[in-house]
Length: 362
Image (cartoon, one colour):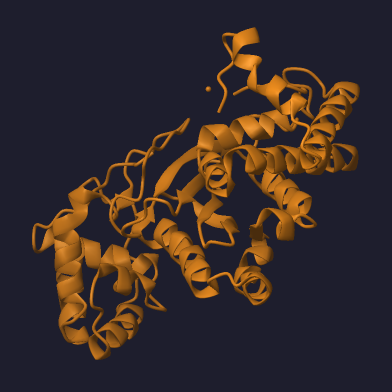
């Protein structure tokens, strides 16, 4: 289940070392206590909630509206849990840029040591990235991908795409808990500061007829489909086709279709998972299904923050290091005492809703 996404302006620079060190310590303490109190599956639910994740970034002292919040928070969590993976049974793989490609290797190492179903986790990683690239074409190109998973094989994905033209980023959250299909209505709720006017969303239930036509098309001889594509291009394009198709070369489409013709996919998810099927091929197939067969896909875009320690750029105020360090100290004391069976500090945290009615406990 994709649980949402959020749009953020692109910011340059990086978190200063003194802040990053504190973010790692505080995120470690928060995740540790959450695991002790609520369990591993609940940790994944929280991280898959785009607003909860955003609030966590604010709590850690990063900028609420910065695209860098995604990369720094996931990095802090990954580094913070590195020495506690065995104890907590929660693991983090991937990262920004080339680090996102390391997921199979990182998951493989975890599987050898902890018996995690590596094939299942790696498939979830690859499919979530491919769906947000091929089936949901919103103008944002993925450049950051992290999968957080448990020893039971539960997982959540936090990944981010960039729209260089607009200078904004969009973050996508996924949760394994309710996934029945990667290719049909994976969104549970999407929140964004910017809603795109026209988005090719093959995952929508409104795209069901289009998916049926596309699945039928890819099983036909490639030359026949290329001919249909050329015919579709000759029609006057509806205004909703915001993406230019003139750069799609028929030879490239034919190359992809040869694979599907020789090894017909059993269903649409299998088609999506096929190596070589990219965004342009999917646009071409969606165009044919729409213009020639009247099977219209969805073009609808399926798309509130708190501060506790300030923000690194001074919004709404600069980070108070003394308060930040005190927060880390209190949580680390709570963790040490919880290990010894002394849960007074945790019980105090539980009482916050009574002390502060506006505070809602997770």
